[in-house]
Image (tube, rainbow over the protein chains, first blue to last red):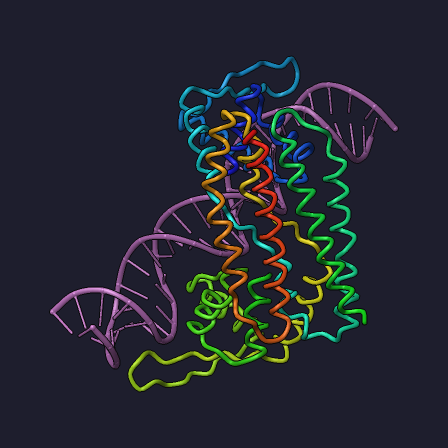
Length: 167
Length: 167
DNA sequence: GGGCGCATGTAATGAGTTACATGATTGA
DNA sequence: TCAATCATGTAACTCATTACATGCGCCC
């Protein structure tokens, strides 16, 4: 549902074609989500069939024609409904890394610490990326803020665990 | 990979059958992960074929026979490798809820606030559940601590956003 | 006697990914 | 000329879920 919500939300602000949507999401929204191109095309076709968006072919002189999408009133209704559902529910995040943490004691302390130290740079990089994210229109800045908070809290936690393993 | 790591890690501590593993995960580890029964059975078969675990049939007087699994040396090696890989990498969490946040400004402030207020109880309940989680053996307590931190930080953030929408 | 718990699975479905296919343009 | 970018998709595959199937024992 979130991917549909995302695509509709973007199309609500501006008509776009598939490639453009996928590029935008993967370039400008990489700190919080992603969407592979085949998935984007698939979803756009599905939503067209559902009547949520309408396709407009814009002929290009040389490149393949662009299929520009525009949201319909039905799409706007679906967006409103999905948005409300999304805002009023809490969907817990999954931490793939916690599984390793659960079995930390299978390793000697020093080695456990070394491995966690190797985890640190990717986390720190993600935090930097979120901090460097350009200010965005509307409430998108809330997402950036949330990511920054979350990643900062994660880094703090990781450092604390590393410290505990160091004495 | 995390599910295999989880199953191997548990089997390393104690031989168990499929039903038992699935029940344990969904009862005692619900605050951080889950595993549906068919998935558990499927993975156990796969890992048996891979030689990571060995099956021992324990006949029951009345109920269906139990297929009790024991980790093999190859399984232990796989566990060690996956554990190290898991600990040294950072796998960013996905927040399904952030998509809604990104389009908060599509709603009147008061309504946005109301919907976020409806989100709060589930989050608070998750935090309570993590706080009430029984102390576990070994480093499992690290996972609980991590969840508590994360959820507390999430609740703080949510309350801040709600406050901002209230003035 | 009816539903729940134990214990195992299969089959169908779904969501998303990777790899592949096409073909023109632009820049090094 | 060779790679990258633009622009669209299809096909095969993976992973996990839901729904279904079986059958006994236990408790109310």
